[in-house]
Image 1 (cartoon, helix red, strand yellow):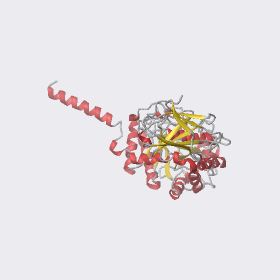
Image 2 (cartoon, rainbow, N blue to C red):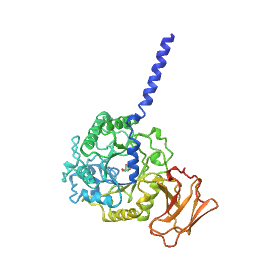
Image 3 (cartoon, rainbow, N blue to C red):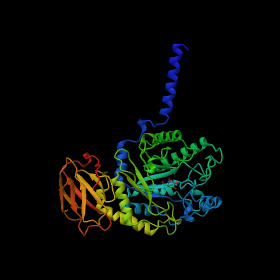
Amino acid sequence: MNALKQVLVVNLLFLCILQSVSSQTIDPKIKTSKEVMDDFMDKRFGMFIHWGPVALRGTEIGWSRNKLVPQAEYDNLYKEFNPVLFDANAWVLTAKNAGMKYLTITSKHHDGFCLWPSAYTEYDIMSSPYKKDIIGELAKACKKHDIKFCVYFTILDWHDKNYPIHNDGKGLQTDGNMDAFRDTIKNQLKEIITKYDPYMLWFDGQWEEPWTDEMGIDLYEYLKTLKKDLIINNRLGKEMSAIKNMSADHSKMIGDYDTPEQRVGNLNMDFPWETCMTIANQWAWKPNDKVKSLKECLQTLIKTASGNGNLLFNVGPMADGRIEQRQIDLLKQMGDWLKIYGESIYNTNGGPYIPNKGYSATRKGNKIYVHIFDDTKTELLLPAIAGIKIESMSWMNGKTADWKEADGQYKAIIPAQLPDKNSNVLVLQIDKVAMDIPIQKVLSK
Ligand code: FHN
C-alpha cells in the first residue's frame, strides 16, 4: 500500500476513534454550569414524591405490577384513580414547613402512567375520573411558595408497546421500536419543559438492556436545546457505581450529579451528589409502613450535608390525594429543627472532618459546625487542624463550650444538658476561611 493510502487509512481510523470517544461524552460546552450546580447544592434538602394510581392498592409503584397486583388489574387502576383531596398547595407547604427547598414528583414511573395531560398517550391523568393536571398544579404551587419544581421521569416504560420490555425481570419480550419510544419520551419531555419549566429532571430506569449511553447523551444534549440551565441527574447513563456508593469514574457519568439511593453518599468535595431516600420503607404509599424516627431523619440530612451532598427525602401520598398526617408531622419537626440549626446545613460545604459514627462536620465562612451523633459521651475529641486557630467554641442554641487543645486534639466537654434531644451542633469559630482547610484524613481516636 503506497504511503498516501497509508496516511488516509490512519486518518480514517483516527477519525473513527475520535467519533466513538466523542459520542460517549457530553459536549462540555453544554454541560450545566458550576454556578447553577452550586445553587442546587446550596439547597441541601428536597422532597421526593412517588405517586400514581397504584396508591389504590398500597403496593410499590411499578415494581408490584404483574407481581403483587396482576398486570391487567394494575394497568386499569387509573379508571378508579380520583384523588379528590389532592391539594398541591398543601403538599408544597408540607415541603416548605420541612425546610425543603425543592420538590421532585414522579411525572411518569416505570408503569407508564402520566400525571399530566400528554398529547402522546391516552394512559394519562385525563383518562382517569380526576381529569386534572397534577403536574401543572404542583408546578404552580411551587412557584407560588418559592420552592423549586423538579420532575422525575422514567426512561424505562413497561407499559409502552414500543419499549421492548413489558415486565421487570423478563428480559427483552418484543423487539419493540426504540426509535419510536425515544421520539415519544423526547416529545413528552418537551411538553414537560415547555409547560412546567422544571428546575431539574430526575431520570431513572437506565439499567435495562434497551437503553444505551449513546441514547443518554443524545437525550441530555436534546434537553439542553430546550433549557440551557436545566439540571439533569446522572441516570441517563449506565454508570451505576456511584449510585451504589462505590468509588465512581465520574468521567463516564452522563448527567450533572450523582444519585446514591437509600444510603448516605460518601464525602465528595469534587462531584455533586444527592442521596434519595424514603421516609418510610416503600417509595409509594403503603398502609402502616414503618416511618423513620425524627433522630434518624435529621441525622440522615446532617450526614448528607456533611458529605457535601443533598438529601431528596421521599413521601408516598395516599390514593385520595393526601400525604399521611404522621409523615407531615415528622417533616414539620425536621423543619422546626432547621429553623434553629439550618445555618449549619444550608449553603454549607461538607467537611473538613470525614463523617464518622461519633460526629460529622459542615462549614461556611470562618465557621466549622460539628454535628454530634454520640451524646452519651462526656467529651468530644476532634483531631486538631494544622494552620488554624480556634477563636471560640459554642453549642448552637446553647452556651459557650468548655474546651481545650491538647495532645493534637480539641477536647470539648459534652454537657449533660444539650440544647436539642435529637441532634446538636458545636460551632468552631476559626481565624481562617473554613473552605481553605483540606479534608482531615485523621479520624478521632
Ligand atoms: O425503580 C426505581 C424505584 O421505584 C424508585 O423510583 C427509585 C428512586 O430513586 N429508583 C428506582 C430504583 O433504583
